[in-house]
Image (cartoon, rainbow, N blue to C red):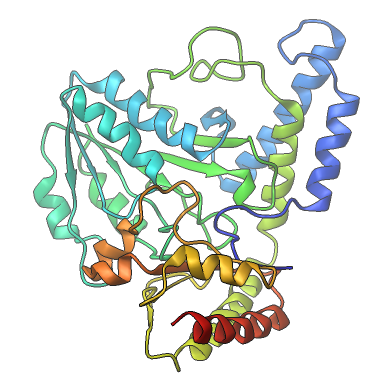
Length: 371
């Protein structure tokens, strides 16, 4: 099997899975229970939270566990909006966000909130001057993803964060789902951030929100004791412990892995450059882990299934997207044909060079058959 869909989800690391199984078997108590079994389970959660806080250089009290980034993004956008609507009802985002950002924003629009989309340049990078123009006393939230999941464009989060430091009523949320484990992360100028374990070789069903202590939220889920007042529900020690484990492992040799993936990315681009109908959508501001290309004349799902016959797995858009056209590719290229024919190849340090050779070989076969 040649798996080239790491941005959708990643295979579970064996050590992480072992941690999940071990904790599941050994710590059977409800962490909220007062008896010894409950206390032991709660200690596991505390130890895991301490490890994550050290890895991200944040406070333990700033960690809120969720089921993943979709829940986290909803929690932030709805939670901030409902808590601070007395300050204003204005939110700013971009045209390069995940559907779990647009979903709650659409919901809030129906409740009377105003949503603005900051302009981006020809490379897809946020226009800081336009962002300044959009900011008002009514702006309560700016939500911008660090790495676009379809094209891989990396936004200047540090610059945006410093700009927003001058606006005391406005919070800065960054979806870092596609960034963790691929590039270095600094949360200094970020107020809230979203993460998910299954993007970093962890288990599906566990994620987290980083939230600065001085910020409050209206919870999505009410009732029931948990690790925080912002997210009710019985805590899951095995998932939390496995999340801490996978985060620790994924941050090892980060620079080395980045360099290796860059090499693979370059090889694919060189291999695809010979085709007249293939256009590279990812650019120099994209991280190498994501390579988006358009194959004009071939429907994305047709190419996907053609490669699948050779046990090669790519994607058309993000796994959570709907519709026939990539909104991100259209926002970048303003070309409907490219937006309707784009495929995403996403890489990992686990990807073998021989797998790239095999992909290019079979892509050539499929291209000649379908074009």
